[in-house]
Length: 128
Image 1 (cartoon, helix red, strand yellow):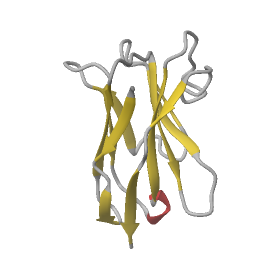
Image 2: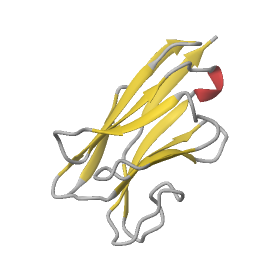
Image 3: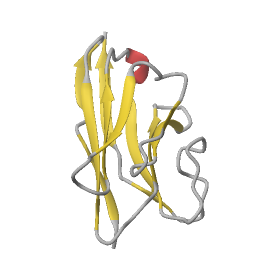
Image 4: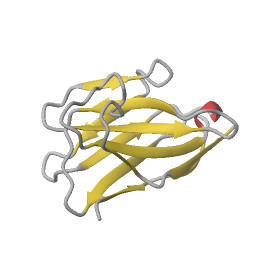
């Protein structure tokens, strides 16, 4: 069964950086992959999305200019999220998502189709 596996979460101090990775296992192909996060007591929010083949990206205002999503050029279905200048409000569990539907949408953070796969999440804690 195809799965998504996130890695790279951890604890950092304010202003620090982390790089998350998400890799698919099994027979999965997606034209749209994204990152979501969910802070305690808050709704899950989309923060960054990418078309892995074309490289187009889309960001939420809350992370634009600080976070960068990228696709590995040598390995399919492997994306990263470089997070810089982390703030306490970035503390959350970060989830990877892949839309394996025919029609996908960056602005919907790859949740437009009816075949969306979610990872289990990786926690990020930013302390002041």
